[in-house]
Image (cartoon, rainbow, N blue to C red; front, side, top):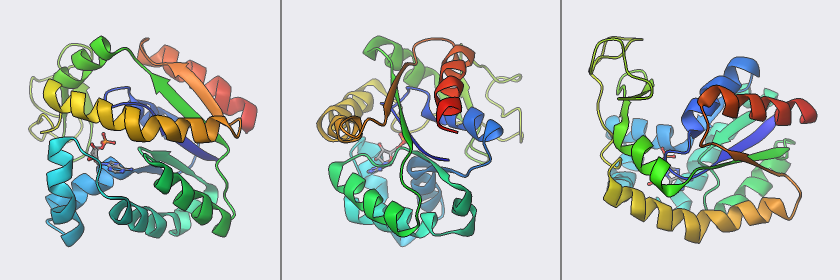
Amino acid sequence: MNILIMGPAGAGKGTMSDLIIQTYDIPHISTGDMLRENVRNNTPLGLEAKGYMEAGKLVPDAVINGMVEARLQEPDCEKGYLLDGFPRTLEQANTLTEIAERIGRPVQAVIALEVSFDDLVVRITGRRICPKCGAIYHIVNKPSKVEGICDVCGAELVQRKDDTVEQLKVRMDEYDNNTKPVIEFYGDKGLVHTVNAGKPADEVFAEIREILGEIE
Ligand code: AMP
């Protein structure tokens, strides 16, 4: 299965992706996670991306496209892929079309998560992540068992530097200007499934399962 999950920051792309890959045996490819790993490891790509990410701005297409192209050629993608947070610009979408054609895995469905701005603020400012294993928590909606400590690996939880209201506004502008046209691009091909992601996670996932069940 070859799918994309899209939505503004805080819409629940990471949480839904974790649930999707528990059901479908495909790799979860999050460009945000890949970039954060590069930043943590101080790679040349990470050093280039860091400033953009902390400001809530999009990292340049050339950097992202090369990274995704290499990843999609790894053997685990022979089963398909769940791309999370890519493509975010029309140029990235065109690149994906080329790569997908080359590897014989065209996009089959785009899950577009929608959440009101007020709900996004609550989600983003309360989000905590584990810097070691990537587990995602929320101080109210999904607290860890011991405050500030990851249930999975025991590391100290942190708040992402871009998870502030100011950065959320910048990221929303990027989303409206660059990523909404991408949703229209796939909408014209009849591939977009819009999901109201303002509901509890299990209800959102039930809707996604139904959509994916139809394309299996
Ligand atoms: P995310 O974890 O998906 O919210 O991504 C965090 C940040 O990484 C974004 O605000 C961008 O700075 C950068 N980023 C992730 N994916 C992309 C992409 N496809 N294109 C450009 N920048 C990206």
